Image (cartoon, rainbow, N blue to C red; front, side):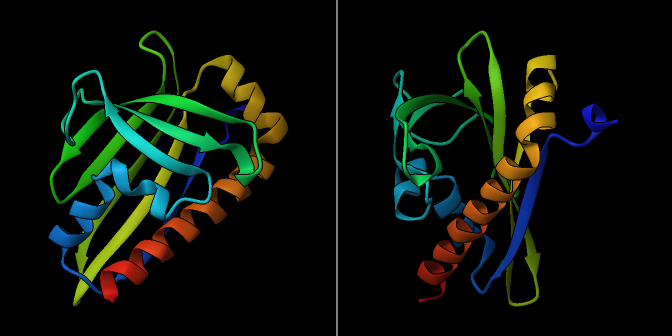
Length: 156
């Protein structure tokens, strides 16, 4: 039964800023180091210069905020301006997981949902079965931290 549970999670925060301003921030991967507790920098790679489907970038990650430290290759998989910015993490041949942001106009601002989804391959299902609860909590805490820091910048 545990192998059938969703392999991911999400957090939503309301930001009192227009969708366009939120979009500009979440789709600028070079700014993630200002907000994320794990990814302290990112840079466009392979000739990519901005958000579009197929664009490549690398995130410099310090796992759990303490290590190990490594670069993760990423590729933009959805880029619907003002709506969804999503990217895969992994090599050209193997995607490990997917991260993204969904935006929705709400009242005087924007509801922003950050989410992650592991690929459903058996090794990831087994990983999630064993460590999913712990890693899911860590990811959700990190997503909330990221979104709250973005909120502080956008509402300043």
